[in-house]
Picture 1: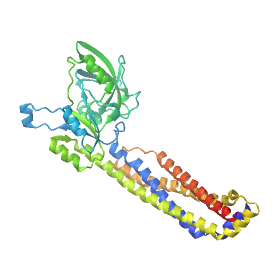
Picture 2: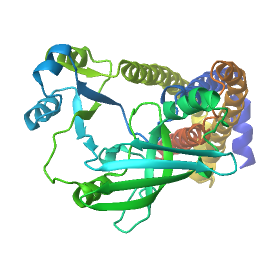
Picture 3: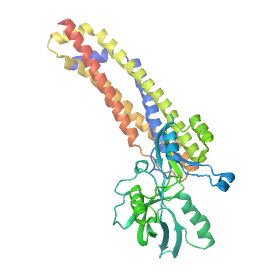
Picture 4: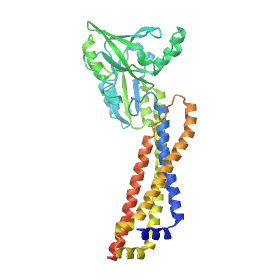
Length: 401
């Protein structure tokens, strides 16, 4: 084995290996930094709605003055829902289901001296749009606790409006679980009391959301009339929120979407596109550096073909001859991975300080995806390097045989 190592060290080109190392390092850093940057920055546009899946729009009909006087319907018929579903930009359409019973809630926090009550309403969407554990977002008849998701601006209205005007203590999202929420539901000659469990806050849904399983049961159990009501709002999942055809179709059909939500979806989509482009550039650089390494190894093997043939003839197996070259490529790839991760963590500390100054409530993004991708790239490239060197040495052996 020492003969093969000496042979490789004598003829190796440090310049070519250095070129590979820095090119691969550049490509790997670009790939890993892009992934980490997306993980850190994307919550800026989706913060508070981690329980909502995918890119979607909340669609309703425009309410006009003339329409109000003539009694124009603002609900969606079955044909209109099917028309939206048939559009090329639409992936899926879900309906908002409204409560057909009376709801009121009492909120109390004895430690803070808070005791409030108010009438309220419920809506639900299909569970496929809600990214919450099925154990936390489900209701069975006989269950005393109802999971709910409320708009974040409701909490802001209380803290910065009602609480200040009444000299009441403010409530943070962390303290919300200390709130005793009693929900009173009545209808069809029944009146029952449930406990409300706040499962999350939403920046995108301006409604009080409950599980579809609860809404289906409650509308049957408490509704005075059991007639099916057409939905007044739809949740539409789209392929690309920046598609101009969406705005054109809504304008022609008299529909409207919440503009700021559409802008957030556009920003998130553009962020994904930019990250994808940067990832492609990084992968291209890594592929080119990989080509440089393999070319260097192949030239080195070709230069030493005669000596390698002699080693094979005196008893060295192809695996023993190939091992030093394989070990060299793996060590180089491992060095690139370790140094790339270190650079990413350093750069991350620089831009994260700036981002957090702009968005103080932004949490730290997970770095596990970055590490997983880095390890997978290392394993994939190293395995291919090992296989390619083995194949080249085997071809020399077969040629000599």
